[in-house]
Length: 474
Image (spheres, rainbow, N blue to C red):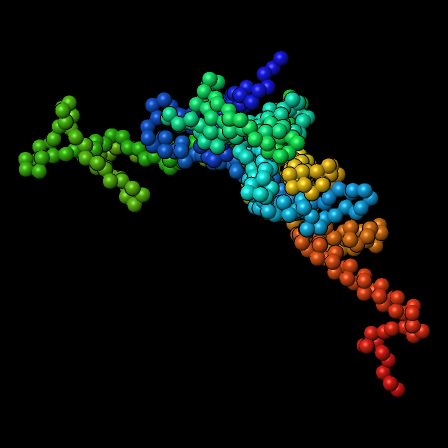
């Protein structure tokens, strides 16, 4: 039987961090532009190495930021409970928790972490009497699941708060289904140096850490958008390096001359030729540039030139590699190449289809994670909505459409399909949940005024009209 004691769990979680350390560090390096050097000769000098450094063209932030910038939670709709209406009121306890945790701004870091490393985490806990949620980095956090492919609730989670340094042990926090523990360790792979203090109850009925996974297969493995693109990124860097080498050393014509000896150094007093240690005359440097030309008195002297190396092939190869990167990463090529000339609205929409599908997949995965966060917060706050499994987060519509086009489309949906006007409000471009609630209040006020006027009209023989509708005297 497996040992499930807190000390054994801490050792196993630290071992997971140690096992994944090199892989995640490599992903982190590529995310921040610290790439492998392109191939170069073993005898490469400093000039070559400088060109290799300049050849790094980091596409990884764009691959992460493009879908992340379309992920923005703008509200929460509570589920139907005992026949009551689903609510999107900003005064709901779920949305109050969101605003208290300042997740409007902090949610982006959680998405980018999941897209970069394959997963990130969010911790929901009571801080100074208030329930808060914050993100946890995949570089510092490991989780254990009984079924990592299907379980939303981890069995135990550990996050490092301070790495071990010199003789100072590292510190970490660990949670299971009931308790939180303080952990100290000497090294990630040193099981004997792990110490776990007695736990204290965290207040939730399950582990208070939620995983945000960009992609999970049936083996429980998570993959982000960076790791699969590393080979293509290396190919692009290698081609750009070759381009820079050709551009530096072979992109201009080389002038040649035969049958002419260069001038040599002479003693200024005697006029005699100066020789080096090997007995060879020391040539004078020739100041030759684009403003000068060469001539010779000897008729046997021949001048010539070597053609420059064409750079078009390198540029086409870079363009091809970027298109491959675009296809595999599901990012439209005009996002990477900046070429949007002569593209119709239909063509742009078709190019965005693959990206839109990927974003919708991320919204589904991350939305489920946020719903678990809201349930945990409700349990810790005691609002009585911890069993609300039918609630859902509302994602902001980030598609760029003109207000006129949207109004025309929404009007047709209202007239031709009979969809209630309130049901179409959230499809207005760039509308926020605050505006939706304000519109709802205004609509209720207008409806109340209309109902009052109807009641008064029924109670009086003459209909009540507004002052500007009273007919003028003859």
